[in-house]
Image (cartoon, rainbow, N blue to C red; front, side):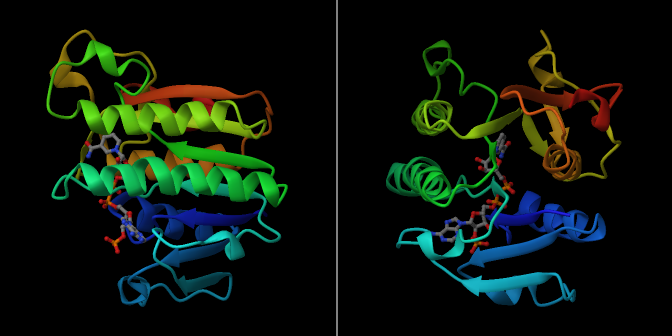
Length: 210
Ligand SMILES: NC(=O)c1ccc[n+]([C@@H]2O[C@H](COP(=O)([O-])OP(=O)(O)OC[C@H]3O[C@@H](n4cnc5c(N)ncnc54)[C@H](OP(=O)(O)O)[C@@H]3O)[C@@H](O)[C@H]2O)c1
């Protein structure tokens, strides 16, 4: 059982991850700006605290073993929020984790974050933000697991994934539920080497990729 801080717990991946973490017996704390979105999750091992990630949120990291960062500004906001959440809140979370001697930091990054220059599209600023957040984590000295999913789908998970980037862009997709499952498996991972993994639909059981 780990004490897990889920940042972005009201999100589409985040909420599924919270439920799965609790089912797996972990203790979960969720700093969120809209606690009502989690009111249906009843569990003695679950704590919700109100928090805007644009403010100082260092006070939530005491006694935390694992941080999961799955927050994001979303597609309907502009570059200002991409900077403040996808980059700066992620950067702050890494710093707070480091100061609090957190054991493992799990980052939900994105396909394309490894090399934003390879992408010539309007999402490049988002990929730059993700890239810099990942680099900051890699250079922090924290033990890290960086997950880079493809385009996210709202369909039931299959528990089967691939970590190989497909040549066909249309196949670079994954259900959000499978990313949530991967976050739970990553939380229980015994191997303490740092790792960056892409995530797509595939045929490998999620537990086997860790
Ligand atoms: N969309 C894709 O195809 C894709 C592909 C690869 C990776 N990703 C990444 O996957 C991650 C999760 O995706 P998702 O679909 O689960 O995202 P989502 O549903 O948009 O969830 C984003 C989360 O961030 C929170 N958040 C944003 N600004 C905040 C603030 N100022 N203070 C507190 N919380 C804040 C949201 O809170 P509220 O509920 O209060 O809004 C929500 O909990 C994101 O990092 C995204 O960039 C996405």
